Image 1 (spheres, rainbow, N blue to C red):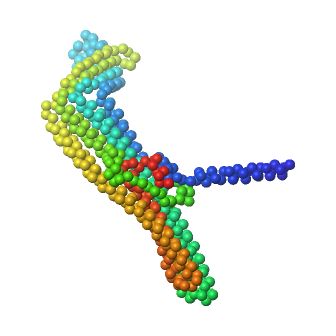
Image 2: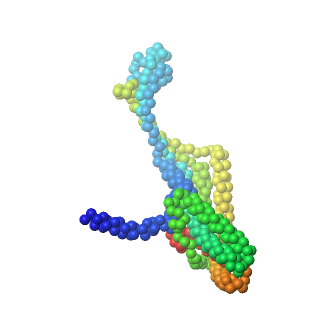
Image 3: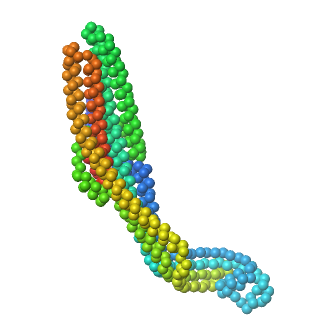
Length: 454
């Protein structure tokens, strides 16, 4: 009975392991979308942009506080025998008596304590719209910070795509190098066998041995490049990744279509977050100019206070209040005139910066567009070259086996086939990266769009 239970338990465990193993393999897979999502959460550059956005939002909330009155509360305890202090304190406490008018009491009063409770407030009722322009400026700065953060997110996504594709192409380079090393080893073994059989000279064996060593070195370099690319991917994401390079998807050829150049430039002018941020900065600077101009106008405010004075904390005393209004006009606003000139100069600088940005963006889109077009054509050429090199190597191998060509011809063909495979995967990599650069230049690169790169 115990053996039966043991066998059933063992069968169940084996079935569970078989069912769980595919799921485990899927969990270890790190897709590009997952890497981008992790970067948008952990990348320090994006965290800085988020902090700057939060700071701008706090500045906007701070600017609105000027609309509300300022109210203060204070509680003070004082004690002294200063004649003026004693005379005024007794009046405020409303405990002044006829005997306090004696010359001795006025000149040399006894030490007197005072518990003072006061409330005071001020409110700017009208400041020629200076506060309203400051609030508008702060709001525009907040909107500009959000747009700038959007551009930062796009740049982070691009760097993740670049690093992720770099890992994939490095892995393909390892496959190519490993295949070349295996082929070189097979040629070396075959050449030694032919030398022993008297069908080839010793130089063939030496040449194949040198070729094998070179291919092994290339494999080592390719394996090191994978580790470097993986480190760059972790740096782009902003955190350590539990998966290794072997847990990523494989690099495959993809077809990236793009509209005409004019449409791409139009999209860039419409969608680039950094261009939107520049426009918002100009609007904010215009509000700053209006705000400084408003400072030349009159200011109308109100103020008031209430206070209570007591001889001790437990005793009652007197209270009083005061309220009033004020009108302020700056009759010699020299500082404000200088500040207005500074704000106008800043506005001109911001407007010139926007014009320069338009030219730069047009160049960036054009460069990315033609680079992508060239990369797509290079994929086609590299694919044809790889097929031709493979066919050439097959023919020369057959002729070498038949003793019609020397080994050096086979080695040259093998090297050409190896180079053509490497060039093909590099072309595929540059095609994907150039498309990502084009989407970044047009301002349309986002987390949802990275599915096109897989």
